[in-house]
Image 1 (cartoon, rainbow, N blue to C red):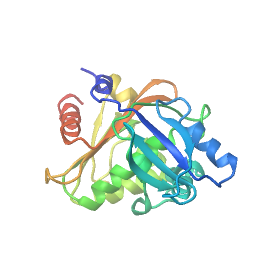
Image 2 (tube, rainbow, N blue to C red):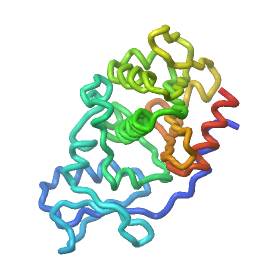
Image 3 (cartoon, one colour):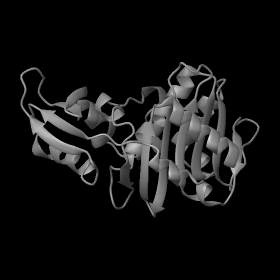
Image 4 (cartoon, helix red, strand yellow):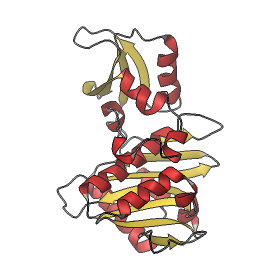
Length: 251
């Protein structure tokens, strides 16, 4: 079984994002539409006096399950680029995920990286940082992360800072990828290298805490063609544990 088969493990609910009482200029709405243009999530507009201007609500099976101000999406994803994360401009503890994005768990996404898209891949980067922050702030447990090439951990200053920070805690950090880097004694992570498909095509960040009642999370994405990813994130403890155990046994 390869990691790509886990893409069939999630059930994808019917969801939409609705911008309530929009006064923001058209380009902001267009950026939101572009971000989800090729996804199963519809972006629409609505008017409702119960909401402030420029509030985005997440609708699932006809019910509103989350809401965020449009400004929060602008700050987190719509008006930023991946350099903020790769250079370490955004500190790990400053990473915030708007509720309407966080609520898109267990939805399958097909996301493109540069040059096909300047923003779609940011969803994966943002959720990855969110899970890394969860591990750092919870402490203990195990964090498993893949990079395709292990050298990416130190090639990007922001990624290096994040993993040095998490590894300085009691979290047991395991990293995976093609073996073109070996951690030094001052970088206390356990590296797993290989060349089979899961090492070459997977992007995952999976945190399992020591306390089973604590929040756990997983992101899994598979590169199906150059810079095109199929993936999801989940907080389902059963699925998180299943993913982590599969990786522990096979990689």
